[in-house]
Amino acid sequence: MCSRAEFDFIVVVSGLAGCVLPNLLTEDGKTVVLLLEAGGKDRDLWIWILAGYLKGDGVANPKVEIRALAHRVLTEGKRAIGVEFSQDGAIRQVRARREVLLAGGAINSPQLLQLSGIGPGALLRQHGIDVVHDLPGVGENLQDHCGGRIIYRCTANVWTMNEVYHNWLRRIHHGVQYVLSMKGALMTGAGPMGLFVRTRPELASPDVQYQFLAGSSEKTGEEMHRFPGCTLVAIPCRPESRGWLRIASPDPAQPPAIQPNYLATQADKDTMVAGLKVSRRVFATPAMQQYVTGEYLPGQQATTDEDLLNHVRATAGTTFHQTSTCMMGPGPMAVVDASLRVKGMERLRVIDASIMPTVVSGNTNATAIMIGEKGADMVLHAA
Image (tube, rainbow, N blue to C red; front, side, top):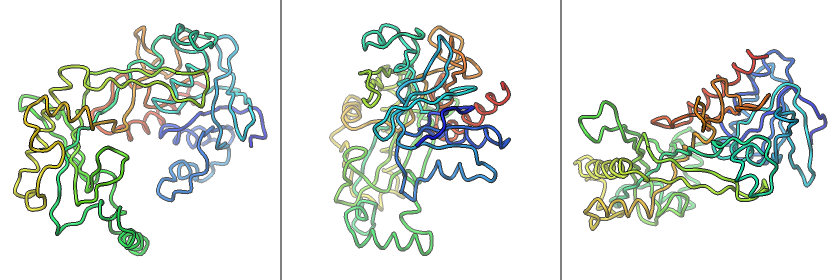
């Protein structure tokens, strides 16, 4: 529970950019930072990300509040002065002497701005929220990398993650192998092999990224198949399609409405189809043919471009690279300026992947961390 009511900086965090902010902001040993994290204690040994960033030598000042759901940024006129949040059934308010920093990622940051009365005026009034600052670009320009999958059945003489998933003895075996030797299935990432490809020779650089998975399921997040299988995900690097995110309720616990608008342009459709055709070419190589028995999804009956697009519409989804909903720039739909300050507001910045004007052409992880580091540097130099 938060015992003090005022800090130099308040950081609302749920993404990687926010993980790097506290160390950098508190290097002088004097600056006092509060981090608000909506989740509880993470007891999963695999993903202690935030804790790892907060264990640097000499970093004593970051205060981390868990189970702290931010409700709104507190304002006086056009100046951010703090954050209201709920924790353990109580509503609390904390003040920032210097700045409020939003680092919740491309979903949470625009949602919190809208809940705070900063965003498209008509949307805010529709939900009974007083308009602090009519900023039409908040939640617009949503971009993401959509993944289209080709799945193959594997031969009986190889094992995949599917068999590990459905067999407790194999789970125990690989768990012990990891603990004793740091080897085995648990040492592999979600996509242990990758590839960037030009689907057309005239292109100057790759237009599709690939991730190979030693396992398979009907859709991302669903139960893995009960047969040996593997997946190649084709991910167009530079989507033209733009979506949006808008609050569906003034209740901060309710998720926003999200329309990613995948494959809204012909260029995006053409690139996805070309990417899936390359996936089939990969599986048709002699090196792969010795390990697979046949295409499971979409199956050999999918012969036309429209067949492939229908397969993507039915099975594809996010690769968790959402960006650009609080984009940086000079235009009327830009949300933050070149210093990541929210336009038209004082003492309020967004420092996360939502500020990218355009999604990067690969994984967003490293870029988000860089944004956190650069943003912290901007904050400190402005002091």
